[in-house]
Image: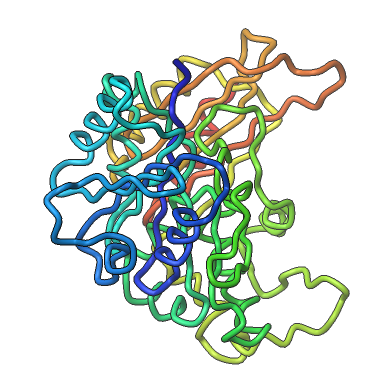
Length: 352
């Protein structure tokens, strides 16, 4: 049987997760989706869709979707869903897990790699993070969970963008990009996202591409992050309001969730790199949110792809380097107060 893809939906209260979920659950899209809800959010999807005082945890809806609330462990709920599906009691093609506004998606994601029984049935597809444009600046300032959710994301949806000025939206997008250059950002209205942008994003599959915004890389080349010269498109003067004050645009210097990119034209020495990454993950694992690399390794003509969440790291041989292709290693690390200099120097020392 093919594995069932799972999407983790995260974001702060009021960011529009419930609206997006309702849309996914009630729209006639012909897909049978099981939604698992962590029950302790302030705004519950139940009020509109479920009768929350029923004993039954799993409700089948008219369009073939299923909604269930977690009262115990996520593993137990997933196993129950998987078992019911195998017995033909439930029919669904994919799962969406809504985490509460305060949750760290890391442990939820790790469940899909650590637990053999879950891994035999389900495949983690991606983590989506909803960011409320109006309240994000304060939430990101005040709540580490909000910053972590941004760091974990494979795709960021910005809701309520119509409630802020273009300059504020631009400043927010800059800030999010520094926290997580891997995740594409898209402003959305009222959860109106086409399902193609929500499902099958393959954020966790080991593919040979490392999507980082090229401007972000370019900016890295200007020496050590002297952020005063963002390349502004169209050569317009930079009029971010936040350039006049400390808020917004330049604020990302204070964010504890940051990303950095390591690049090198030299090949890595496999044993050295393995030892170094193993040591780093051991020490900093809890603070490493997402990391990924496409590497040029000595001794193989194929790309080596690695990625990880917290302490869990996996790697795989990718495609051959094409003839004439410039062999280079590129890695991105997203984490909380990671010591960039230690990582960069350590990686340099693993090169041939």
